[in-house]
Image (cartoon, rainbow, N blue to C red):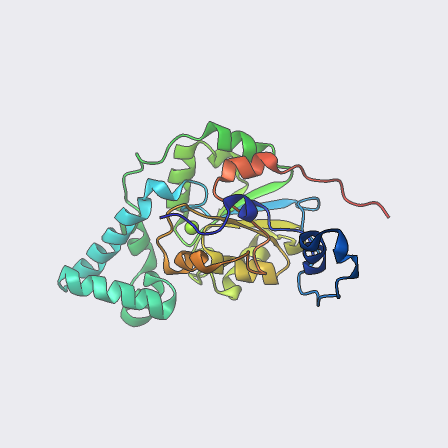
Amino acid sequence: MSVPYERQALRHADPRTQSERNVADAGSDAQSAPPVEETREPRRTFARTTAWIFDLDNTLYPAGCNLFAEVDMRMGAYIAKHLGVPFAHARHLQKSYYRQFGTTLSGLMHVHKVEPQSFLDYVHDIDLSPVPEAPELAAAIAALPGRKLIYTNGSRRHAERVAEKLGVLHLFEDICDIAACGFVPKPEPDAFRRMVERHGVASEQAAMFEDMPHNLEAPHALGMTTVLVHSEYPDHPAQMQMRNWASLPQHIHYATDCLTAFLREIQPEPAPTK
Ligand SMILES: [Mg+2]
């Protein structure tokens, strides 16, 4: 499936104000163009970024690896086994809990008092052979100035395995997983507040990289610079909505379909002197 917007236009959100765009679009006669109400916040750069926070799944590795397909099936298998129900019913419960509670695990914890670690251990016991070694990504992350963190709705063990396979684990100061956030998942604002507090992150000096558009709303509200790492083949409902975008939503400063290329292009500008 192709995306309807221009990929290049998404890579960096147009930093111009609407007035500036109107002036440019209208050519030289536009000097007399009427003023347009400004709604866009000032251009965000990475000049002050001292903390680089990355989601794990489908962000640090390409969505094309399709790891979630196996995790998804194992969630169904876990529910079937744990609750003693047919697999088809387990899949129905899985999707219902996901919609109602934000994550399947939250539903299982609330409704069935499932012990979260056993669930996480089971669903993340997957074959990582589709995940490639990524030396170019590792070099791009290593070149970023400041702290680097992984922040995932999955487990620490899963993040460690995947990051190790990519060859980037050693570059990260720490991993914030779902357990570290008291099993409060993204996109809940409280989850991000817990992560920020736990790791002493100065939100205004942090950048958050994510493949789920709605997971960037809370970090944007906290003052972070937000980057959407989107797939050419979105399959989540929240990502499917991207097809209707004419431009980036307010809560997303940048978007890219290639994290490595994006990080290479970042040239943190020096902080302005007063
Ligand atoms: Mg993800």
